[in-house]
Length: 268
Image 1 (cartoon, rainbow, N blue to C red):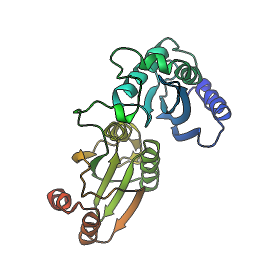
Image 2: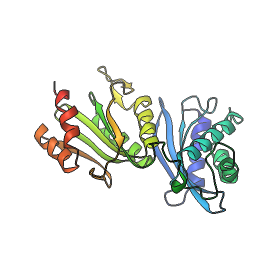
Image 3: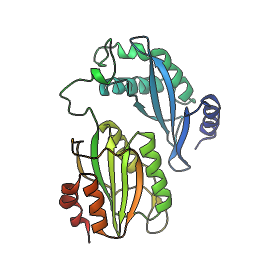
């Protein structure tokens, strides 16, 4: 990472020093830094709207744009997308200089203006209850992922935990012999953002021991959470001595059919 980016991270840590305001999710010379900032901004109803902004500063930053993710329980999917696009547009005008603090301040000052724009999905009662019906994406979703292998297990598991926490996802990272599965529950957008992190971060090593990106992750199944599904209260890592023990975990979660449809075929 460039020296200016390192200095910016130190400055941000000092600025956002309140409880839970700042968290570094990952940082390396090859992948850059991923961190989140919790803040608030005035919405259309003049009430403060909590914002969770996740920034990815790539190695070339600030000469290239940062990655930005926006989460808020008070905003709809369309509103979050509008805020993200507005922040990226603002970032384009700040290229070649440290910009994260300016972007956060800009979001604080302009959120209500962004939400008022046509097509942003804003309205007098912005929030989840105002989400457009019929999109099929609102409410919790369930996804089952399969990892082909995990060589750098300690680092990999730590990264998965951090991503799930940052994106507000719950579920399980499951090991049973050579079978490695990830069950995720949460907003569909958050699951999509998780997959981006999974596929673009160097979390594992190749056969020669060099850091590499995850190219063997596959989405086996995805749908909205059903009434009979267990709601996972947290994200946990579990290891099982046999497929039978793993099957019982699925049964306990009300996902026995999911196990029978996808898991036995993964055993080589």
